[in-house]
Amino acid sequence: MSTASETLAPLAQAQRQVIKAQAPLRPDIITLTTPTDYPKWGDDNQYPQRLLAAYAGSGTATVCAERKSQFIEGNGFTDQTFYRAVIDRAGGTVDALLQPVANNTGYLEGWAVRVNINANGYPCEVLHQPKEQVRPYYPDADGVTRWAGLVRNPAAVARRGATYASRSGLQKVPVYNPREKPEARLERAINWQNEKGEVVGLKGYPGEIYYWFQKRTGAYLHPRPLIDAVLDDVYSEPNLKRSRARDLDSGYSAQVMITEYGNANPSAEILEANGVKYGVFVGPDGGRILVQYAASKDLKPDVDTLQAPDASKRYVTDEDAIKQNIREAMQMPGVLLGREISGKLGSLQELQDAVLYVQTLVVNSAQRAIERGFEAVFRDFQRADGSFPFRDLKDFSIQNLTLEQAAKLAGGTAEPAPNNGTPAV
Image (tube, rainbow, N blue to C red; front, side, top):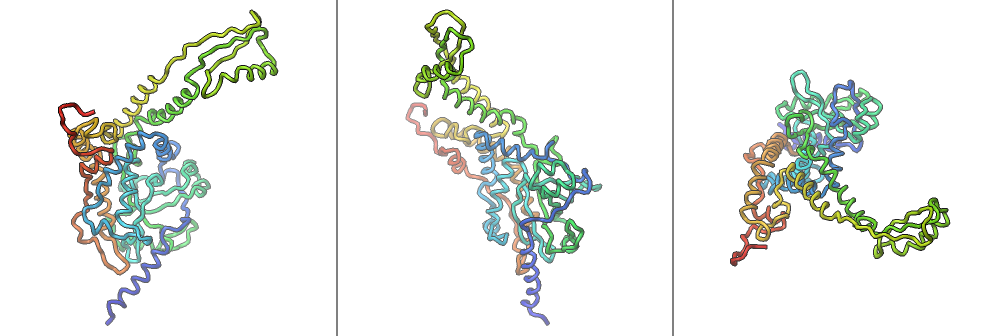
C-alpha cells in the first residue's frame, strides 16, 4: 500500500516539470493556415496600440482611464485569503494580478490572463496577458471561439502572410474553457505540436488564454472603447498644448513690421547684415518683428506697429471643450478628477453622487466580469501539493472604494465644508 508522500511525489515532479516549461522566452510560432482564421483588430491590426498612444498624449484621457481603473480595482477581493494567495512561480499574488487586469479594463474595456496547465489538466499558474496583444479567432460552427492569437508585432501580423506572421511572432493558443473536463484539456496538451508538426507535448504547451471585453454594437470580436467616439479630441489635446507653447514662445505673433526699400530681392549679404541689425529685437526679452523688402521709396525703412491678437482666451475655451468631451465619453465626473474638490469648490453631496454614479453605472459591469472570470479560472486552481485552495471559496466579489478613499484620489476630503455663514471658496 502506497503512502501519501509516495502518491504525491509523481504529481509534484510532473508539476515542477510543467511549471518550468510554461511561458517560454520565445514562444513557438504558429502561422495562420487561412486568412479567415484570425480577424484583425482595426484596419491595420494596430487599433489598441494606436489607442494607447493617444491616451499617453492626452492628460485628460489618461487621468480618466486611471481613475476608472482605480474604481474597478476598488479595495481588491473581499476574501483576504484569496486576495493574498500566491498564484505564480515568481511569488505573484491574486492582488498583484488584479491591478493590471483592472488597468487594462479601464483603458481598453477588456482584459486577459494566461492560464498554465499542470499534468492533471488543471490550472496551476495564472499570469497577466496584456489585452492589446490578444486577437481572438473567429468562432467555429458551434459559435465558440476556441483559439486566440498573441502578437508581438501587430504591424507585421496585419499583412497576414505566412512569412510575415512568422516574423511577427504570432502565437496560437487555446482559449481556456472552465467547463472543459481536465482530461480533455490534458489530452490536447500532451498531443501539442510545434510549427514544424513535431509533438512537443506538455513540455511545449503554451498555456491557455482567458479573456473578456465589453461587447456592444460594432464590437463583437474586439473591444471598442467609448473613447473611440472622441478620438479627435484626444489627439487635439496635445496638439493644442504644443500650439499654445509655440504661440507663447513667439508672443502669439509679430508686433512690428519693418520695410527695407531699395531692392525687392536683397542679396545674401544684405539679408545677413539685416539679421545682425534687427536681431537685437528678437528673443525672449525682445519684440517680435517681421522684415520685408521693396524696390524704392526712401533710404529710411518704414516701421509699422502691428496689433497682435490675443489667442489665450481661445485656447482656454478650446481646451475646456476638449476636456469636457473626453470626460463625458469616459463617463468620469469632474469632481473625481480634482476639478471640484469637496469642501472647497464642490460639496459632499456632489462627491457622493459622483462616486455612486461611477460605481453603479460605469464600472459595475467590468467588476462583475472580473469576479466571474477569476472564479472561472481559480475555482479549479491546483497547487503543487495537489490541493484545490479555492474549491470551497464562496465569495469572489471585489470591494468598492469607500467615499473617503474616492475623495483622497480626487485630492479632496469627504468631510463637509465648514459653515461659517459664508460660501466655500
